[in-house]
Structure formats: C-alpha cells, structure tokens
Image (cartoon, rainbow, N blue to C red; front, side):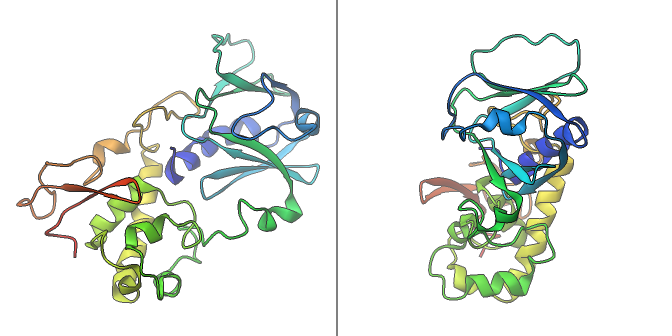
Length: 276
C-alpha cells in the first residue's frame, strides 16, 4: 500500500494539473471501488473548480469551490496517470475513473485491486468525518514533537512498532518507514511503547520526520504497483537500511545481520545489536 511519502508524491504530481482548473467531465466506469461512489458524485464534481490539494495521513483531499472536498485513497494498487490534451491513452480494463479538466487534461485513475476509494465531504465537516476524526497529529507538522509523542505513548503496553502504525497515535505512518525510523533512532521494534516516552521519543520524532522527507524527495518507494503521477517510479527503496534486507549486514554496526519478525501480521526488519 502506498504510504505517506508515496501519497504526498502523487499529490504533488497532480497539483499542477488540478489546482486552479475546472473539472469539465467525470466518467465513472463502475459503481464502486472499495466502497460505492456517493450518489451524484460525478455531477458534484463537474463544473467545480479545484482550489487546492491537501494530504492528510494517506488520504488526499481535493478542495472544491463548491464548499466540498473529494476524498481520495489509493488503496493497495491505485494510481493516477496524466494525459495532456491530444495525448492518446491505451485503454485498460481497470481504468475506473476518468477526470477531464478545462485544459483538456485527463486524469485516469487505475486500480486493478479496487481497494482505493473516492468520496465527498463538506469542507466544514472534514475534521469530524469518520476517516479523520480520531487521527493523531501529522508526522511532518509542528504538532508532532517528542513531548507530543511521549504523551500519546503513556501507558501503552503494545510494542512501539504497533503503536506507531496506530493512526490514532500519529497519522499516516506505514510499515516501511516505521521500520526505517526505528532503526535510525536505535529503538527495538519489540520495546513496549510506554518505555519509549521521554528521551527515546526525542530521538524517534526527528528520525521519523527525516525518513519521510528523504523518501518524498526520492519520489517514494516502488515495491509493487506504485508509480508517480508522471509515470515514473520512486527510488527510495534503493536506500533502505533495514526494510526487506533480512540476512544482509547492518549498515551501522557492520557486524550483525538484519533480522525479520512478524508483528500483528506485518513483517518487521531490525538490527538486534543496534536497536535496543
């Protein structure tokens, strides 16, 4: 599933083609993705001007001049491809949504697993929407700090890896970048979350921010289906220190092999010597 850096990269790729543009046509090739499209979804978008795009956690929000916002989640395999006016698109049976702007640009949403979603919400109700109401702070915001993380970890008896994947603790973190951030902060993924509060949280927060910013600068990580809106692949996967590197030597201590364990059904990669 695309994680925060991948969603941010896709959003930035869409911004030049959507922000300030008016949507002239919306073609839905099916009635649903992961969930049904809202009643009147296409009609609500057609004629609307896109004022700005925003990312919240792993979601995109397209703010319209009608007072509504389009909620977009890419799911496991969703992606957008941009075609300029006059460009010919090769038809794909998994092209589910085609959005045309007043510039003649077409944005084609393709999702062969159909785990993505598109919905609508009033802008005044975004914070109360079920997708966002219980979310923790954005990890790249000023609200996410050592003391803020420490407060959210108090009393938690789950492993820190599981706690960081809990969207109520911090919004948008996924498996890849949590593994990488814990390695950088030298914190074992098996350590109880409550024990990370304090000095360890002060190390962990900048590690999270840095790994996310570096991944965004690299266009995200392409492991399976992910591609940027311009069709290019991300390349941060070439810079992984622990993720998917089981059995290879740790880049830090250079004496211990990276190990893998399963936590809550997810693969965790770590160095047992460096991470305590």
